[in-house]
Length: 344
Image (tube, rainbow, N blue to C red; front, side, top):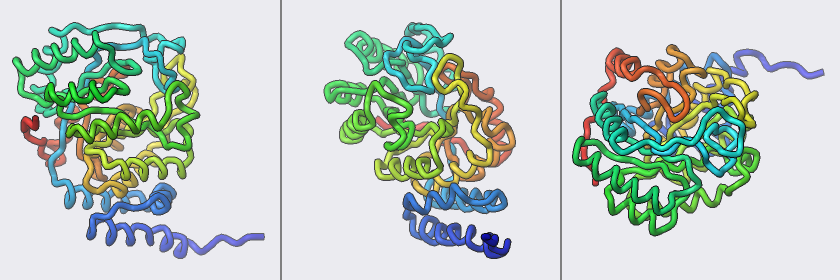
């Protein structure tokens, strides 16, 4: 028969990792390692507020108080040949999303509307394995038209790239490129089989070498273990992306993960704290799924727990919070929106 440790002992053990993190991350700017991150993800519920407070202090010290606002839009939706099990844009699943192309005037209009919210970043996304010549030509035309009409940094997310395509995007002034790892290396084959984790890493490495900012994020709540969640945060920290969008699974009809269920909000808050304590200087962005996983109260908690960027408005195939709701919340929390600066 085993005996449970006294409550005071359990609590002191749980808080020990926060004491370590305060010195290691807050004072010295050194992110937690994989084992330490697992301890954060395993914190008891009553330690979550302390973890979020520490993560917020880390964010303020190492990133500043500004919050970066971004809008995203898809130039090509649906019909993707890849089998990412979470994605309703895959042409391999019986999903209600169908292939659609967006014309350039609509992209320019969306960029203007995004800039009007105070956003500094506008991301053009395409559901493809990687861009062909036709898509690259459209991206070049879109970038030129947007730059003629509105001052906003342009980001792209076009799948896996060749070296020539990376060089072209950099030459055209693309400020940031998004290519998510999505999940830990050890769990990746459970989520994607049509390409490898290493292929994603190759694109990420070329983007950084070309001088573009790398946006490389996570989608959590796909059935991975807490240990694999810690593994992913540590792997992202090693990659040193400029930005990490943190997505929470929103199970989509017709995909292999449609019955996975919504991630528990407390686990999501633990993850926010852990990712911030893994990467003290990285832009950590609220992305898809937060509306369902966290709701309004949890969204507020995350902004006071290490998040320093948000995607406003709708996502690629799912609805987000109204842009005004997020902007009003930032005002309420006295969080200034990062001012626009043309980087390239």
